[in-house]
Image 1 (tube, rainbow, N blue to C red):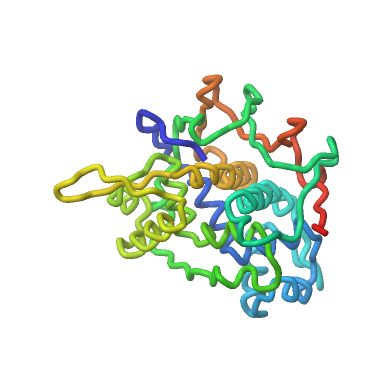
Image 2 (cartoon, helix red, strand yellow):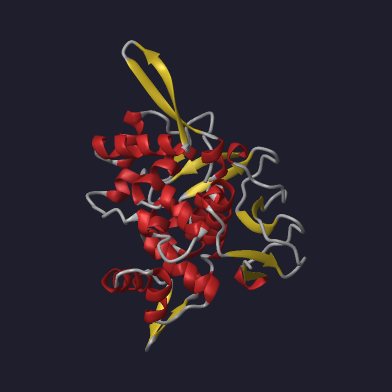
Length: 308
């Protein structure tokens, strides 16, 4: 995701908001964990998903159907096989795992880690600029143009919030811990708006089309969790804006991975945003690389190993 530009970005007509489209295609936190099992562990059978996740069978069936309808899985007899777009979800999952390890690791050890086949070292996902190959950070990216606001895309849809406290009931998992913080649709979109420079309550409401009570609940929760900080910008009457903390800024690779995935696989998202790298001044696409050897990576380049 891009950071806030000094001047307002140009509005792109006829395009889709890539992060919203990715959020819609992937689904809720349970869908992310289904993809975790498929991408990292090679799980394909319904009963295996159910056993490994501890999820109700009706809930699992709904998530699998959603991922099949979205083109991330194919249902072939008894098996749910990853499509090419489903396999390419590796970047989203890897960045979510890394953020969970960094910011939620105090809750106890998780079950796996990743190693890069190419250099043999522990894999840390880093997005680099396609123009200059330098690492990308939230503060180094300018949005030159952006698609329609999320409110225009969301319309009157309503989405049930998953039981985030149940995501680790079978085993510890860094991705599940990330999803406990940002795994519901509205929280994800609020954070997306923060990376676009939205800071004030009325602006969140206008851009997201979200009910004020729901927005207040999400903002308060993200402040309590340490993702956002509340800063007064007016004293009489008191009004506050919301800014990303260090914890929130470090989350940047996750929505950037979703944006990159959406622009590659979802037609409506291909021209939904134009990014420019401050350091080199050029427009770019984000490339997922290994921190140590800087080589571009995908799922086939990574070994997922159980911790002992």
